[in-house]
Image (cartoon, rainbow, N blue to C red; front, side):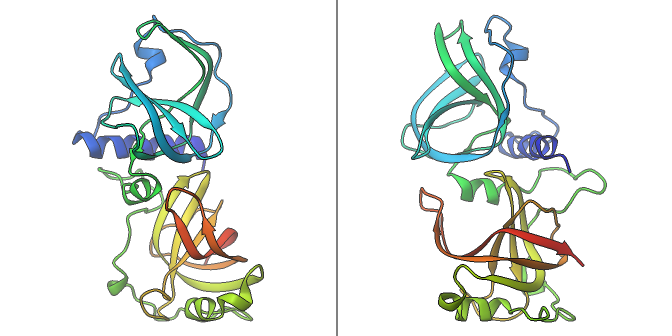
Length: 256
């Protein structure tokens, strides 16, 4: 799966859901406003979250300056409602260095043009990752499953591994250690902050100990049975209130 193309498709679906127009494709300001100039685009940016410190509208686009906690970046997307102080998630986008906006009469050292900016941060982006229309044939499902309807019959404990509940129960002893766990994907959120996010359940545990968050470069779809291996991280803080008591980062995920 080509990351950039896939994320643009997701971003377009997110924007369509927000506007109520399923087939509307986000436009880029460079194409729609030739009076505004920039040099050749640089490499794409991975997704980031942060707080809006400045915002301005121009030529049908909203520009936001976002403080990620470690840097301040400018991003632009088709016009949307946002205000200073809002938490936002900026997806992967094209970097335009030395960008000059004639309508704003302003120079930007660097602006990231993205299909949509999600107000509410990473949680909003993950919640909105299900597209408004049908996915292309063969595209991984990303809509969350209702865990109460998931059939865990046949999901067996990984050889030499742990169940989801056992990982939570023994998390203090497992911190930093490699574990293997088998389960079903109940939610899949692609290309957020440069990673694919999986919520994994295996039928063990109660609320708070039955759902394990995984980040990976591998693709999966809701309903897949997968074997996951990776190191346990505790108390992971991505900033802006996005914290995980237990998470498996950069995991190897094998669809079975």
